[in-house]
Each structure stands twice: as C-alpha cells, then as structure tokens.
Image (spheres, rainbow, N blue to C red):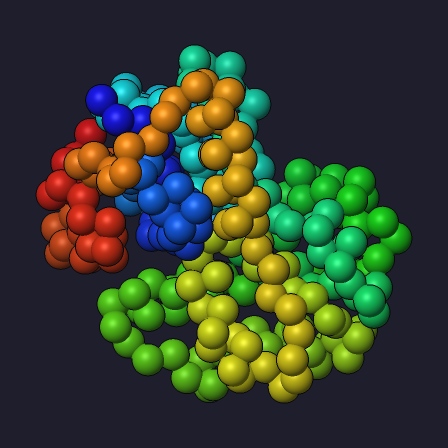
Length: 264
C-alpha cells in the first residue's frame, strides 16, 4: 500500500489543508474523514466535542489504515490533540492558529485573529496568544459566517463584497483595526476565501494560515517513518459519519477523486 494520510474535519474546510499537502507531496494518498453528523464543530460544547472527535477520528483511521492523521480543523485541534495522540499509534498533525509566524512578520505590531467564536474564546487560543504573540496586539475577530460562505464558494456560488463586509468591518473598523497588517485565518474554511478577502479589503494586508506549515510537518513525519512516496497517489477514500444525502461533500472533494462516500 502506498503511504497515506487521513485528513479529518467536520466539514469541507480541510480542503485548504489538503491542497497544501497535495502541492508539496503529490505522491501521498489522501483520505478524507468528515464528521458531518456533528457539523459544525464551532457551535458545539467542549464536553460534547472532545470524546466525539477522538471516537470518530479513531474509527476512520482504522477504516483507512492511514499512516498519519491530519486534523484539518482548528476547533478539533485545539480541543483533542493530546487525547488523539494517546489513543493512536500513528502520528497526529494538528492545525493551530498561526500566531507565532504572524508575530514574527508583523511590522505594525497589530494582528487580527479571524476565527470561529469557539476558537476565539477557547483557553487554548488565549494561551497561544500569551505564549507566542511576543507583545503584539491581537484583535479577536469572530467570523462564523465565513464557514457558510466558504462552503457556498465550493458549490460554485459567487462571494460578493456585501457578503464579506461585516467581517471586514470587524477587522478594519474596530479599535486598532487601522494598524492591522496581518490577519491570521484561524479556521481551515477561511483560506478558501483568501482571494475574496484580499480583493474586498479596504487596504492590502497579509492573510496568513497554517496550511503550508502543516504540509511541511506531514513531510517531516514521512521522513521519520521512512515512507517513500510513489510518483502518483493511490486510490483515495471519502468517509462520512452521516450519509452524504445530497452529494455536496462528494462534490466538494471532487478535485481529489475520492471513492464514493462511505458512512462509518
């Protein structure tokens, strides 16, 4: 069997991570585990989410026999990485808000953290800011509507300036917003809207996410595991926790040509 990774999420935001992995490691087989039966994670309590994430990811790893688990969801990563690493023999790569690289790159010393409400308010995120913001100001920008807009874009819908105006106002037209020079996109859905955010922003800034760093970490683990990649990936699986009744998940992941969705 060729080396493979399972990319896990509750929705289709993990596509942004998968694209970065595919660009860096074109021979790696990518499977997708989507917990659509509990979507969206951002509105669920920590008490309900943590055991759910561990159980679903563990089940999907067993079904695919993947070599690496990539948690392609900020909410799941900030809640359950230690627990996943305890129960899985395979390496677990998580995605967390890119506070540290943003702090190193900002020149105005003011960063916007654009995330779901759950991620913005989570202790894990506050600890990241305290540990890695390096004294820079971090403006928390809850933007749950970007999840819906990113999925609409994947369905072929056009995202307009009016759609994004409320989020852009929270970034630029709030106290300190005039000094923001970097916005951290702290949900894997959000990079899917990078072009539109950049186009409709009132001035140019840098939009930063963790996708490329996650891909590099997967490459590091492949080297550690001494897994050589073939020239082309093998067959890809799509697993869902609830039936993909309207085919939207299958359609969203079509660029990776997975097998028809299987409910686990």
